[in-house]
Image (cartoon, rainbow, N blue to C red; front, side, top):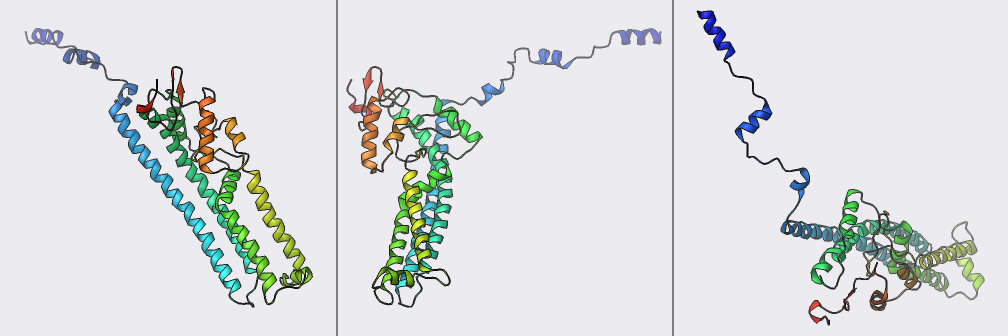
Length: 315
């Protein structure tokens, strides 16, 4: 009797329930879990807030590196001023301290060029956000919609890289600040050798005074001339290097290449140095008549001048 009851109990016990059947039984109407792509999708308000904070962070980074650029320039100016004050304070002061200071200023130039490359990383990102995001918000009907700025910015965040070469950074900082310091030091050295202790009567006496230890004066003079001439030639030869997108230039063309390209007409326009106002004026004229790749001032049915606001647009 007991065995029969136990047999009936064994045959009547519940079946093991799988995890899938348990899920279907407890929550039959539950929706499937969202995919990772759907979970990462942001609302427009969240996207705008993220872009605003990201923009503020990149501006802060660029300002930090910009202040570091100013520091190296201050060092070069202070050391040059101190050296000239010492050299001209007495007729017995040696003149070779001025060439030594020129070498020190050259070291500051290399340091500033390196810092300028880092500054251009953050400055180029700020420029991309301004041209691709804020410009479309300020003038949505006049600026063609461009989706490449977001992909370019994402690629730069994943693989940061320098946007300009070492030669361009050296040439740009040399033309902006250091060429004048080197010119002042060169003129000061010639004036020091000529005046002290008394004005030289001829060029032979000038070369005799330029002697430094066992080095003849003519060798010192030739080395100084070659050094300054090399700096001048380098400053002129790097004018056409225009990859710095953080400068006051027209909107550049994005590409998948790590180094950003500027348009061909910008390279042609950079053959000689120009003031910022003149360069901006020519850029506006070129943008109104250029191709669609770099045109940000017109659409197929309307045109807007870059100096006008959206409420002044004439249809």
